[in-house]
Length: 252
Image (cartoon, rainbow, N blue to C red; front, side):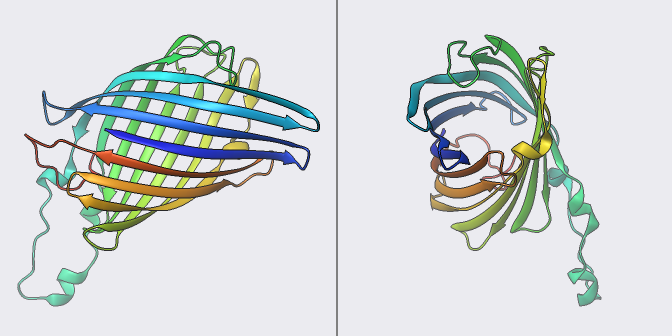
């Protein structure tokens, strides 16, 4: 189970800005097979727009997703670094095999609230897909790549985006992360949203309270200023690990 709260403010100019309070909860279930995981998540948000003396506000569920993720290749399950008993220098060299990523695929159905204030004309149901890859550069440093397709079957609202997250473990409990996200292409009816308008940078930390309970916090900002966006959020994740033992809580 994962859940969190995100605050976002969009500033167009001094007399026009939007604020959002977003809540998300996600449940993941993987009892059937180690490679297969079922995922369900829901997003609720409240929205307020202020422009001069005009104020508009609304709240409601934004979307509900059901899908499955399958780990098609796990390089690290079989990768063993060979130790050279004759050379300390050889053992300290970077092992290029670490760059071969583990890869997973996600596919699911996205249910959109047709009466939601943010995108009121989105289709009620659509297809969501993801390609997820993760590299472990070392035992403490990893990079995860998410390539996301939303509304794939609807040409008027198709969205292609990415998220790249770098994580560094500082200790068995503390880690920090940096994230860059952006849009390859996004359409809203006949309009195409430029890539640069949605690029963003985030940074934060995670703290493992117990082996199965973790909290996190982050803050971020958009790169472009049309509008300028700031975000901040907190979250918590908990797992009930009975059958399978994964090498790292951030594994695919």
